[in-house]
Length: 255
Image (cartoon, rainbow, N blue to C red; front, side, top):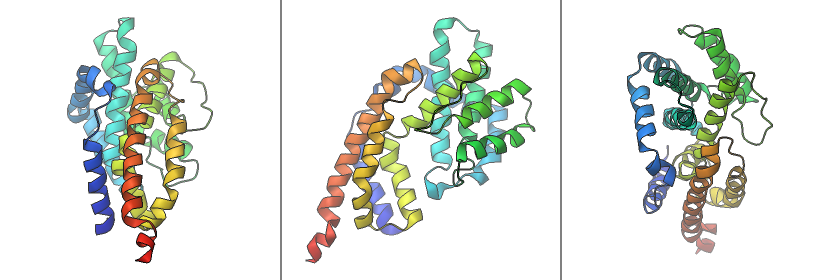
């Protein structure tokens, strides 16, 4: 990342640090901690992390930072969604592991057209090397196929497939909150070689897309807490836009 973009990213992080943490990350600290523990200690998940890291493209803002956060939030959402049903901890943990796999694999073909479908096809090949049932592989792949925004999802063939699919989607869209403006934006700007002035010109369109995502969450938890996550991101984005406008609008009229 070039020095100007990195400096702007640091400023975005400073702006974001002034905003309150969304309620989801306060209320559900225990499920998030459990998801984190599985992510960093489960042998199969550790092996999958080693498998996918070389395939992720940080320049597009969808590298290991993004997939780590998506993975852990997917697993946490699964725990939250099934807890009222009294599912056994063993079964819950297994579903959480499938969510972690789906999160790690969902963007392995991010640069390709129809990346969700391409990613699902590649994921199926990689998953053959893991001790998973045919149904578990199918569950993960269906979730990956359904994670794209603003496209009609295909209904899953089993209820627990649908659970993992919906949780992956919501966890991925949580990233449209502050992560968009503290991480993804700057990696994509650097990858595309955008100047601050070019970035400024595109900003209103980007924020309008973020507004649209708030109404698309699929789980009960996502619908309740996701809009606040998006709203927090939008407020951060507005402050970043004002900063860019102040410092880079037409090079201050070329003064």
